[in-house]
Amino acid sequence: MISYLLQSLLLPLLLIMSSSQASVIVETISPGVGPPVTTANRYRSTVTLYIENADKSKTPSGWSTRKEDGADKDTTFAFQPGVGLIEGWSQGVLQMKEGERAWLHVPAAMGYGGSPMGSRGGAFYIPANSDLLFDIEVLGIEGAEL
Image (cartoon, rainbow, N blue to C red):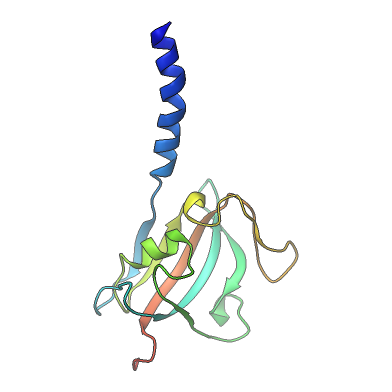
C-alpha cells in the first residue's frame, strides 16, 4: 500500500520534472567570428520563424525579416537576451556568437506554451503548444558597424 502511494505521488512529480527539463538545441549553420552574445547588449539579427513538427519537418509561421522567406523587404530585428523574449530565444542566442547563423530548436514549454500567437489566416499564426524553429543570424551589437 505504501509503495503504491509513493508511486502515485512520485510519478506525476517525475513527469513534471522531465518535461520541465526540455532545452533549446542550437544547430550552427555558419559559425560566428565575433564575441559571444551576452545579456548586456542589444543585438541586430535576421530571423525566420517556423513551427517544428513532430517529424522534424518545418511549417512557415509567416514571420520573417528576410525577403527570401516572405518578408516585404529585408529588415533586421533588434533584441536583448532576457528582455521581452520567450525563454527559448534567450537561452538559444546566449549560446551563439556575433556573426553566427543557427537553427534554434525551441520546445513549446520554452516558447509560447499553451497560448496561440497571431491569428489564423492573418500575417502569421502559431498554434498553442507548438515547438518552434528559428533560423537566426546574429549580425552584431545594435548601433555598431556591420
